[in-house]
Length: 368
Image 1: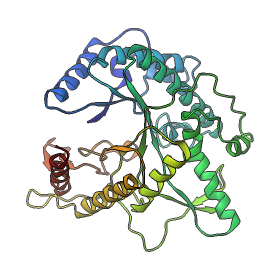
Image 2 (image 1 turned 30 degrees about the horizontal axis):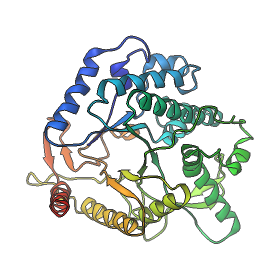
Image 3 (image 1 turned 90 degrees about the vertical axis):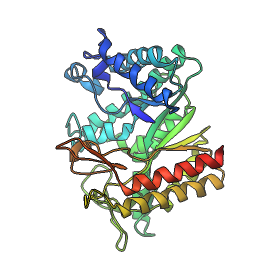
Image 4 (image 1 turned 60 degrees about the vertical axis):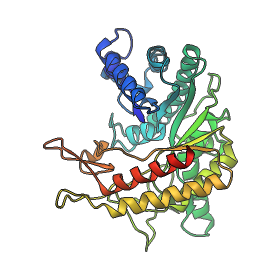
């Protein structure tokens, strides 16, 4: 079961005074999971930064990397006797660019130069945080969850091919290359030099014990557009789309996992998020979400294909267990296997949840 720690819940000021009640909450959660035979996977940062840190500059603050390292050490020391599997950050690309360039996520900044600086500090935070976890718990398995997508040109035109390469650099290589100890990609450093010169990463690399891959859709790219990449995203005709307008393209998950294995050779790969939002309707106390079931069936099959091609795939997490607060979309977009009535807080297992329960029960029986 994958869950995140709320940094403000345990360190309301970002550093210093610890909220023991917050730590007690996670103690109880981990103990409850272990009591029923569920293995916890802990993410340290899923986008909730302590307000006190934000007021000092957030992910651009001079002490934010040290603060994250202290926080990682605290949590590893507290939970590491029972938790083995850790992720430092969830989707640093979203933190940097959705939060500091597009501005649709907190803190709502719209400045590309700031976003690039934030991306650099997130790399430093990953390295410092991973080192802190390993210092506190030498047997820990430490990874990171990256949102990744295959980036394809809309045509064979050289401009579209170059556009897809830029988006791949922005979304995939800018984050994965340094995670695996490589320098920033040279083509993106050259492109970004118009806004800011990014320094070399001064902290030692912390190669992951596993790479978490969050996959939802591919990117089809056409040259042209007003943004810093000069690219327009194309929605192919004839495709099906989720309630968020994301193309359903299961074979791209297989393509992505094979590419990740070829280009970065992770020790292990775990699909840490994969799922779809649909406009679920409750009828006769039932949610017949056939589209979500089909989505999951197709994507799990694609993951199995990748496994058969030598990808060291060791796990798969559906996004998500129950309907959630979906960031800029609030509660309007539902990803869960379990339906949440937000007025009453009643939970109902959707048909997709029942299907998934049967699937994993059958696989467990085969494994045993």
